[in-house]
Amino acid sequence: MKVAKFGGSSVASAKMLEKVAGIIQADSDRRVIVVSAPGKRYSDDTKVTDLLINLCNAYVNGESYEKEIDLVIERFKDITDELGLPEQILHEIRKDIQSVIHSDYENELKKDAFKAVGEDSLAKLLSVYLQSLGMDASYLNPKEAGIIVSDEPGSAQILDESFDHLYKLHDRKDIVVIPGFFGFTKEGKLMTFPRGGSDITGSIVAAGVKADLYENFTDVDSVYCVNPTIVDNPREITSLTYKEMRELSYAGFSVFHDEALIPAFKASIPVCIKNTHNPDGLGTMIVSEKHMTPNPVVGIASDKGFLSLYVSKYLMNRELGFGRRLLNILEDEDISFEHTPSGIDDMSVIMRESQFPKEKEERVIRRIKEELDADMVSIDRGLALVMIVGEGMHSTVGLAQKATEAFAEANVNLEMINQGSSEVAMMFGIKESGLEASVRALYKAFFKGQ
Ligand code: ASP
Image (cartoon, rainbow, N blue to C red; front, side):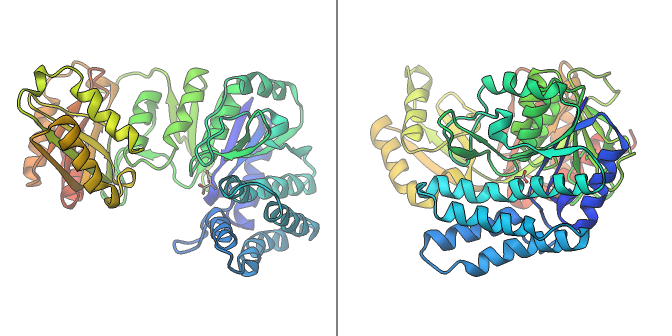
């Protein structure tokens, strides 16, 4: 049995849904289908989820929101018209939107309920379409499926009991269509996963039903070893491990949500990333273990938008609890950090810039100086992280040399180097302006001529 998840671009138009139906029809093992909301049809199109967020914002700000509702309905109307589906579907969507508007949820919960309308409506629409083609398909709401999540609006996490509920789907003979991106708390409140979270639903469902394979359909043939907008025609990765994928998707590989791997990994369900435009292509397999290739590096990931908070204090190494107290201040200020490379008398804390808005800077710096008696505190924004990733890097000699030579060749200064003892990834902090040149130089060093 396979769980197939179709992402936003795969369900963006009637044409794409025809392809989706063909893919489902082509393999009778594809019995559980998870869908995103319609995404972009062309580069400056707007995703349905973003249209729903605009609608929510207009509502919350007390502005008129009729136009925003119409924009959402129009997206679905384009699809139902072209597929010849009943208008009733559109009335239902309008009714669902109205019931969110008139619900007595507070704003945060309302926002999640608005956002969920996109996947929910598409799942209903797709099940009607599959029925119209003679398939035995039905829509299943995440609440009935038993997807139980934590009470964290916009960033819910799955609760373990969900997996047993979901196993009941294993024996169903029909095709079940489940909307991605949201679940319900034990108290029955709707919560969404973080953005891009339909991948997470797919992975949870695949783990719950103990699928033989989780297929994640997107719009690329496979995962590339480096960002294809930086390097032309980069090499495709045919197979990689969960750990490698997790590291790569953390830093810029947007093909698969980084939180989506954990459920599949824990249940040992292989994941295959496939292209809806080319479903017979091999795609990229993500598995627990793979044969090691001669090249220990599988990919180069890179992402912008980080900052470094630098703190120095003479004899820091002898001060018990300094690191904890520094991180306590950040916790207190609701700032989440990513890495903490440190020296004898100094410590840097690397975080996403979005975590540390400029308004907080003055206060946080003052607190660190006063409460920790630090000698110097500074913030350096505009940092990029570049990572080379590969399980085969473990105990391979000379990789850091090869990588640092590539940075030197690109004439880029290294602000930070970090490698955990698992040796799955080596991370470099550089100025954002040097990112493209470094990635190209690293690609040349690790992949050209291999
Ligand atoms: N529709 C949601 C988003 O745009 C979730 C998803 O597509 O995975 O973030």
